[in-house]
Image 1 (cartoon, rainbow, N blue to C red):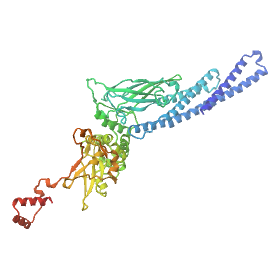
Image 2 (image 1 turned 135 degrees about the horizontal axis):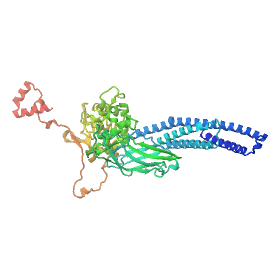
Image 3 (image 1 turned 90 degrees about the vertical axis):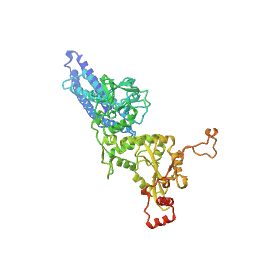
Image 4 (image 1 turned 60 degrees about the vertical axis):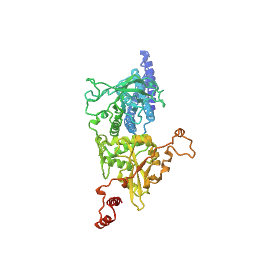
Length: 597
């Protein structure tokens, strides 16, 4: 329809030019000739052209009205909805969800739509020029054209303001997988894009960054200054895809001192629950329109010590899991609850995005039980912010800090094993035994310790004696420092227990469910034996080379002290017979031996 309107305006202009020429020609006729037949015929012809001109003007105005109706619908019901969905996808991607945040298609739509709006506006300007040349009684243009121009300007203002957005949220390059947590004194980056890619806007939009522009000074939050280059011009050259964008790469935050000369928050929230906003502003000037543009980042958490990063990231997760309102910076004064179905999906994202493999339903069920206790169904259970991040588990640390410690443990020491799916990880001791009870002796599984805040891993194996008695053994969990010294695959390869006659033996044979140990971990072993080995530097110096071998020793009853509880009842006849044949010292030895059997 846009092309039809443009052609109709052109036809209207041609018709009006012809009418104007004929009318002015008639005006130049001599007064004596105005009563001639020719003049009367020309007047009649001009009246017909005026009627046609009036009809054409009404038709053009109607078509422009219909076009604006369609564009209004397209903008509010389709383009803005697409933009809203993109912003929601960006929130999800920021907390580890699927990355479907390409803006190129949306930019193409926005650019074409903006060009159409400005073209309609030019057609209305053209109608104004035509009106200044020719008007008449009953002319629809003086009344309808200003209204239509006002309407298209409103559409342009709304559309242009929505086209300015944060394409990549603030993030420290040192922690790319945990955006929106910023540390004072550490550089962070942020990227903005203007979706209306018009060539004449290149190097025209100067963007300035500020922080907490609309925040209240009375709420007790900390205040910050932005350091670094906080003003840059948007252009099409720096971006790989040629978008009209700008990236701030060297921004830092510095906390302001309070009026008392101190730093720190004085409000009701802890530092990692304070939400702040990075704001950006610029001015759009095009076709005699001047529009002030503003946009903001998603809420950020500002920390002063890297130890606050896990708790700050928990706040980012909670906000973006539950909220779409970018300006609700007081969320944690009364944080909403999350359903387990919401939280479980986000927890799985933490693992898939950070360590390459998400959580299975069994693993999530174990986490639900740990957090909520045993339930018939967890999906509709609600989890409070305090239970997730602030209340201590029986081991004196919160659920989230425990889980974050495991994420760091996997990232630094167990990444390949986790991605391969060799770590069961989250399984209770009861379910662990249920998994192993029907497996061959020597079958083991890997699970995370529930008692270590910083993350630790252990293995449990099943052992069957000759008489069929089944036992389960778990080794003391290995911490990050231990895994730094000896990788877990080497521990599993070299692990020994002391059995009868002090003979060391590796009880680990099959990784659950039934994978031979060397098949599962062989490619991850270090210090693989060679058929012919060259002398090491240690051996050249006269020493015998060595390596650490992890081992365990089962408690031995023969070395344990004897207590009265160890003595078994003895009949009077047996005791009398022993007393006749043995000395008192020998009797004591015999009693101890019987007690140990």
